[in-house]
Length: 175
Image (cartoon, rainbow, N blue to C red):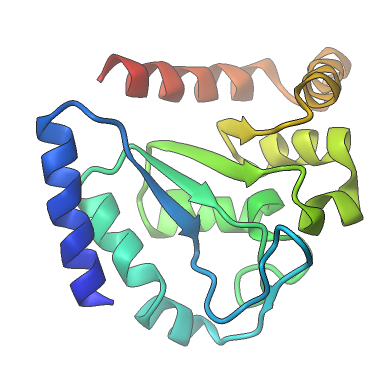
């Protein structure tokens, strides 16, 4: 993990010197899990193992000023056994508070089978924003856009949350 972290730090330095955006993925790591493009993946490892292995490269990246983190659709039971990481407020709070990341958080594609089998297209998009994602990677754009727009209109999603995400995205674009 440290060797990977050192590599990430050096790559991020070069990317920043050349004004290139960057995204670390797939938080919090896949371990030895199933491909979420085709099925639900569950990570049963204890938190200590996750933090001493998979999260170390992310820590290096965050300390080196990474712009964004893409969150996987894996259920990581030691952080949240109820929702996949991409739709988990607990996972996003861990990223923001425990790991002290203040950049952009994005989902992996929300039409991957691990998500659509459980939540469908529109609901997954709304849940992703509720969890704390700033950007949604989505190939069912029209369905997901309409669902998010309706959630804002109904008050399920707050304008303040949308504005905070927009500020993070615009700051990234500006930099």
